Length: 374
Image (cartoon, rainbow, N blue to C red; front, side):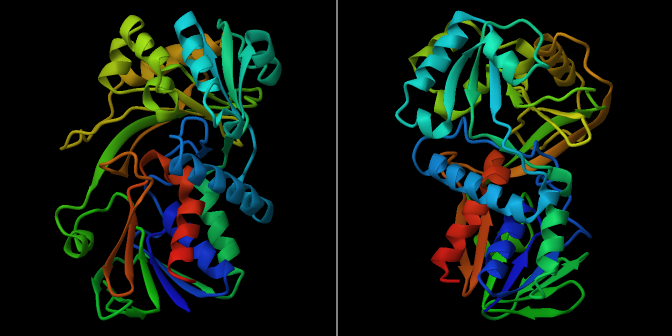
């Protein structure tokens, strides 16, 4: 079988990975020289802890298993089973964590409520003030800026993979064939359109104007090296307000009696933080849903995140080295893990995983491969 994959972000690359792993030939086409979208502009978190119960959690857990196996084959992914800590400061935040611990799937997530002393034993860099922390053992991380390159190098070594960068697919011609803007026609047995947040042009022509997917913009930043290990990923209690696993009466009480910081509320913020291999910290994020998106980044969210991180670390944050914005595609019905649609004979559109893309992409691609009988 010959599979044509359009898009070299993590969703497209994982489809290429599964096809090659099952003995098939793959041609992957990317309109940039290399992927430059949301797959590089995220935390690199394999984030199990906050996922909704049911299909979403099952997908994340399967993806976590797949990431670990791929990481063993491809050290350049930088896979590490670091887990995550969410430091808690108030009784209401602790109550939300306790409600999460009462979930029937809490053990599958690796939840445990720790004292501040126990949390610092896991992550000594957290020297700030907090009373307890929610630990999620199943969370992990990879290096987002280099993961696609590492996967591509391994795919190239198979001898069954061709990468064509700097080519934009303009047209579907016949069954399972596409034409790029160089005039070349690529024919296969299946075409996977994994175009990320690119939802216009060919995608609109194929899927129609009522595609149930929206675009979301975010802001993030990265610091100079911290100078010491941050041994786990770190979130704050605002993540409870964002992730569906934490919905409970305790969360309702938190929202009612401990309102979010005005800047965080305005920008729909939570803290997520991961240390990169070079020692720097990737920190975010915001969520912007209304179109048209701003073309610039604003400073208030960065100032808010800096205050929150410094309070947890008990020390000044290293110099901010990078600031950026990114856009990802999210199913309008956020309970759906991904939008998977056959748009022509032999042509499938896979988009809309939202903030779950980095976490869930290996399992999303595996499901596609299984359904298409690869």
